[in-house]
Length: 163
Image 1 (tube, one colour):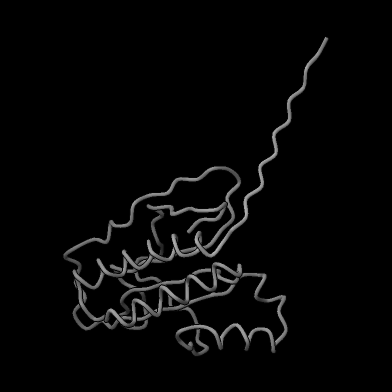
Image 2: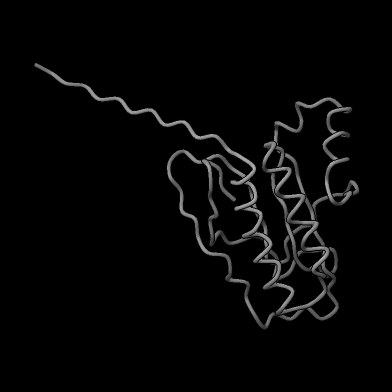
């Protein structure tokens, strides 16, 4: 006699999940603000709203917040990459923004890329989504990183997706 067992798990990503992840981004930005200034509460709220909406619809690729000097990202800069989870993922607490970095002569910037689901939309659909976002971005080229790489150190997850 033999036995077999199969388990299937389905997760639906909801607005609540998107808000959970965006709140972690917002907490990181508040720490960045507290340590380095250059970003207002209003701007943090706009970034949180943008991340919430793009995550909810599956259109966020990556988003980077931080400081640039000579058109290159410097520490402290935070990059979030949206991804689907293959299983249960870690949901770290926000934080780990490094204090005491030299930002003299640097300016705060943000850069966002969209997912492949975004690429599948028509121009009219993209315009409709952008019209619902709390801030309007302009086209640009992604800056290089001054030390050549970002270190992966935190994972935020909810509803089968992660940042």
